[in-house]
Image 1 (cartoon, rainbow, N blue to C red):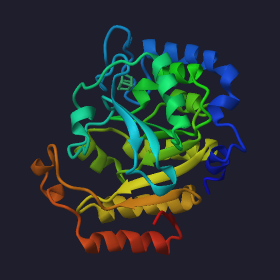
Image 2 (cartoon, rainbow, N blue to C red; image 1 turned 120 degrees about the horizontal axis):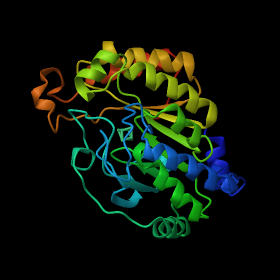
Image 3 (cartoon, protein in one colour; image 1 turned 90 degrees about the horizontal axis):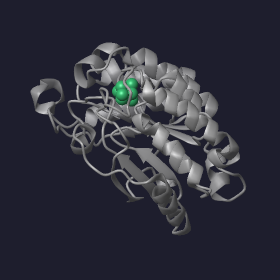
Length: 290
Ligand code: SF4
């Protein structure tokens, strides 16, 4: 598990974007086409992002913060984490609502960001962690950064995975590890709590693609009262379809943002809920991150 990730860290292998460096100008041209008729994600707004933002509220990339993150999974830290503002989801309980739902941050020239990534590499970062909000609307920018960058660091796509097929195709050439957020076990819960359509169909499709084209860590944040409808179907799907993925079962949910308007999620999870999900994952033979 994560063999390639560790091989890059040991210097035995090059990260994918360095292996594909000569393709990056072509990838940028493809991303520019998508950007002008935006379909980086499955909202498929079709807007010209040079002129206006779509549902994610992102025109050009806006970096809310970037720093050495020590709160990620143990094999990832320290992780040079780049937080974009804006998101393709509208989760009523978003734990990062200040950057995902409101404009925050500044545009940083790609050359400058590439330079900072190289410095982070020299200072011991283990990876570049593209997150937000959501990285998907910012793929053109990410490619522009990587074109200028030479740090042999694994690239982590830390995403809700609501990407379009065209985005998944570009990611194939640059992403080493997919760090995914698998939230709901059906479309109805996603529509109610994240205002997203066809969640299950799109997210399962993209997880299958990502599993084929990179290594994978799946995060599942347990929501109160969503064990039967969400946690269990997700774990069953993982066991059947992406059995080698590592899974982080997360217990840190707390009601924030608009969660108090939704009675069933207006509390932390109970220990019994966590135990039930954890035991079920063990029963299914899932690779749980301890
Ligand atoms: S990335 Fe933003 S503008 Fe593009 S399709 Fe998705 S929501 Fe719409």
